[in-house]
Image (tube, rainbow, N blue to C red; front, side, top):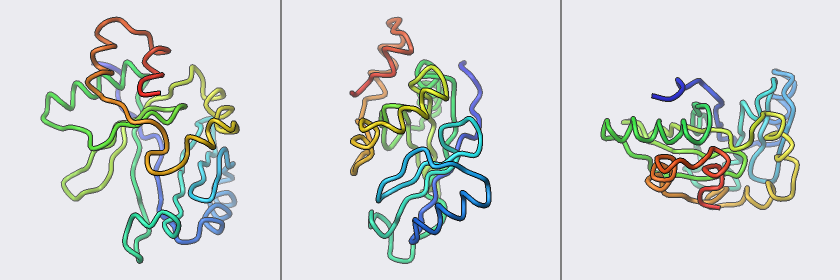
Length: 176
């Protein structure tokens, strides 16, 4: 059922976003593909992001001393594969706590038994280069605002539309 999941990226909470961006840029020769006052999306290869650094001082979502891993992202092939993953995990009694279309990606967020966030994500653009290009647009800047950093969607609708034969291009617009 669908493509196997692969480690995609990880998100880190930081109390020092500018210093963290500089450190990851220097250490991994990573490029910033998108940055605002809340987050920076960076990559050292053709992936649109391998790191997402969240400024915990701005979001205030975690305790004052919180820092470290925010979430771990696992990628799958495309929106139909994301529907496959949802269906597989639903069959195991696991349900996402949040489903968000980030425009260039769509994601299902789960919580493990220790309340760690695990993201299963797919690209909504046909190529990595198109995802990277989107990250430089004003549409990306508008989408990357709290509280959702995109648009919520119903995973049951994703599954239903996939089962009705919707293309990945159509599924990539879910929730928007």
